[in-house]
Structure formats: structure tokens, C-alpha cells
Length: 94
Image (spheres, rainbow, N blue to C red):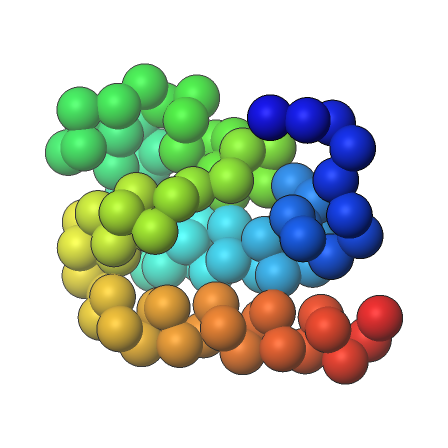
């Protein structure tokens, strides 16, 4: 893919929406008293993947978001709705 990307066509990795989604995962994980390792084990992933997603150093795709939501006993539809709200709020700030 070309590095010449028009403004707004792709979102940067470090957006407030991405950060808020990661924070939401971390908060829910804490409520359930699960470690990043626990979540990663349930998904068959490395702990570092969970850390990177929670700290917005890696963006999760929609399928990964749904898988994480299931492990964290979150409603995937509600989580995606929250993500959409985060994006709308971010757009209003820009």
C-alpha cells in the first residue's frame, strides 16, 4: 500500500478512540481479576499482544475485538457501539 495516504482515509494508531478501547479492555479485565496472560492464554495469543492492544501500540481488528469481548464476558455489539461512539467523539474534537 502506498505511504501517500489522504488525510482521514486511514486513522492513526494512536487515536483517542483506540486508546479508550484499550482502556476499556484493561478495566474489564481488572474487574474479572484476569491478567493479560490469562486473556492471552484463553485466546491462544502471546501476552504481549494483549498488552499492545490495551496500551494502543497495536490496533485490534474487528474479529479480534469480538474475541477479546467474549473472553472478557462483554457484549460484542455493545462494545462495537462504544467504539463507534469513541470515533464520533474523536471526530467532533478534530
